[in-house]
Image 1 (cartoon, rainbow, N blue to C red):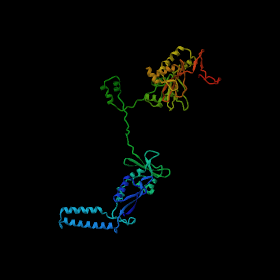
Image 2 (cartoon, helix red, strand yellow):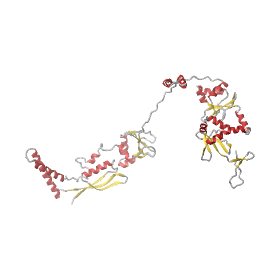
Image 3 (cartoon, rainbow, N blue to C red):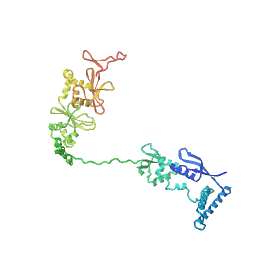
Image 4 (cartoon, one colour):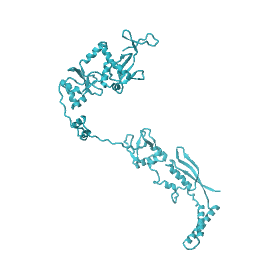
Length: 497
């Protein structure tokens, strides 16, 4: 009947760092003929376990031990004889030597040296030579601190990368918090004093590591991938092209003649300021550089743009306009006082960003609008001629979700092969109004049982819209509302305004 010796095996509280270390530990047990009879892993860590192992042993007082000792003594004797024969002291045949050597090897394989387990529980006992586990615990065989903390790190909930708390590592490894902090300092980390301290990064194997302290005073280790730079910014040198080369290329010169225009850049020379005239001559100088208004007749221009066109500071232009009586309005004021020069009236206003604009309008523009308002039916033929543009554009309008039709004026102008300004001017002449803001109340024009209007969208796109009119023409020319479907007979008709 065999006699067993038992051994308690454990990985420690923190467990093994990698599965490879666990496999090596179990393989070493198998090499020493230990049989694992109980193996229990921790519920939260598959690399942490406790268990029990056993293996058979033989005592010296057993018959088997005596036979093994006799076999060992016989083997030692034969080994000595063979050594003497090889040295020439006792010659013998080669066949006998071979058979004897095989017999000795067979007896050696059958015999296993007993293991002394009497001092296994003595903590002060000195081992004759370190076992494989002690060799594994040497510093060269252990993982680095960065590799050891990676399996315990989790995704950072407040940013990119992963993080782990120092107190969590201390509990997992059975260390004190001071031991983990000391290891961090040895690895080059800087422990901040508080949560507002600047972050100091440490690079290892292409990743960035740093330590921070939260509001509760907890120390956390963080890591993320090191960002890779894609480009660097440099300042360019402004250049200009000679005017002679520009004119030559514009007049249709050959490629060889135009090529020097690209090969002869030179730094831009400072422009000479233009002396501003006084009185009406100043308006005559500014008016060609101003643009036509989009919403009504007349023209306007920004003082910033005009001063750049004249190559002088904006303050000088404003001072010259003040000499004409055109003073920029203050905050909250609509526009400045109007000044009449020639056949135009002029005034200044500010945009939403505070920029100053000069505006001009013909003196007869307001009178024309007033006359058209007071006598809307003075010339029906002229109105019908202007409104013909609406009937021309009607087939190009696309259906909308609200039951009407609409199209962007820029696309309509392209389809009509005319400029956008000409098309808007024609729509204004037909009685429509160009809104300045997206939510401005539109002006409707009724034609052929439909109403037309313009609206401006958030992207500053101007759209022409049309839909069926809710009113029908009566015998007296007045607009009458349709009969309501409501059961209340005393409900008033909707307003036509």
